[in-house]
Image 1 (cartoon, rainbow, N blue to C red):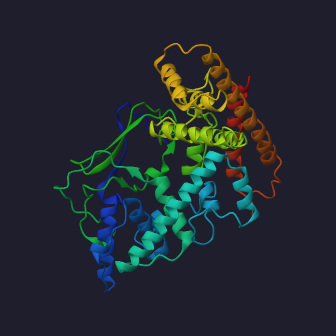
Image 2 (cartoon, rainbow, N blue to C red; image 1 turned 180 degrees about the vertical axis):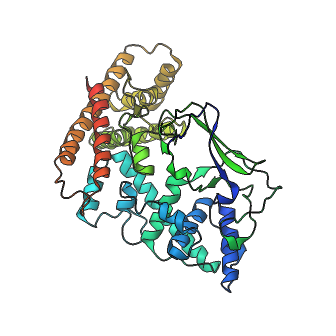
Image 3 (cartoon, rainbow, N blue to C red; image 1 turned 60 degrees about the vertical axis):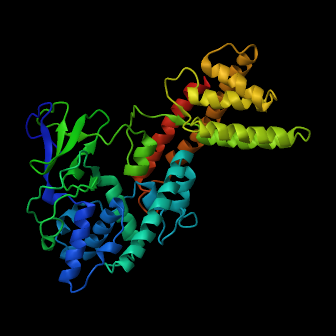
Length: 431
């Protein structure tokens, strides 16, 4: 979306009337009205879809109606596919709660070249997607509403909502109403409900993301409009951006299907490396017959303790870090005390607590510092090696395969960018 004139700081960029906002409460009322027009009925007390599920169902139904939908022009304005979002590629041709690993060569190639954190996120998305599909199908049966049968259309509809829904911010008053066409002209007057938190807002799809954009959003309950204000000025002819939030490229690729060439929020996740190391350390301890049962049990107990205290996971290295982050140091120092030094459980915990309080620990402190730094370098060297292989694979792909039975060229470009960032951060911490 381009500015046709100068826009001042604090000025409204977009105002979307309430009648054009698509919310879960409106969807429910529209489906009840449509069923009545068609000579049927929907049992409203059986309609128990979440907001995301309701909006997905609405998109699905309107897309299925095609030119018979009163929202046909809006449906036609939406992307034909989401080929740059990994979930769209990996969700398969039939319903499943797991990522399709036995399909085409394209699917297998994408899975093999996704960074582990991204692969894990897609797996979680697939689980939620299948759960929403199953619940919506069941709900459509018991409520006697239009059935959901087309898996690929549902995947597309689910991603329409995921990539385009916005939060309403401050909830509007539920006591004041205006007459509007609502979601469907046959639905009568329907305002946003006080329980509505998210909405689809036609035209806002045209606003792209920029990490430097600064905006504020609210629902103006007096004018009954959703408003986006800019906190920075724009000159005529400039593209007007909004911000989707402070997200790294793994998140942006999984949720929206694009990456930023220079993302200020990029970091290197080491959770998977830590999990692999824990498994390997336990295997080594189990090989020491005299101490295996006690030390392996201690190791498990320490990991559980870290999880209970919220100190396990989210091990992220930033490009400019000069030492391992606190969370990673905290976990590794505690575990190394048992794994490398053979310290009894109580002694390891007491020493760790002294370190956390900044108290003197003795000669063992330097040993643990060295072990932690060495572990980080080894993990980064492993990721550097993997990223080199991935970058070579992606860079040497036959361009005839892209967009022709293979992954989309843009998805391949995004994956290349992600691996370049992993390589750069890993190389920095290997030095």
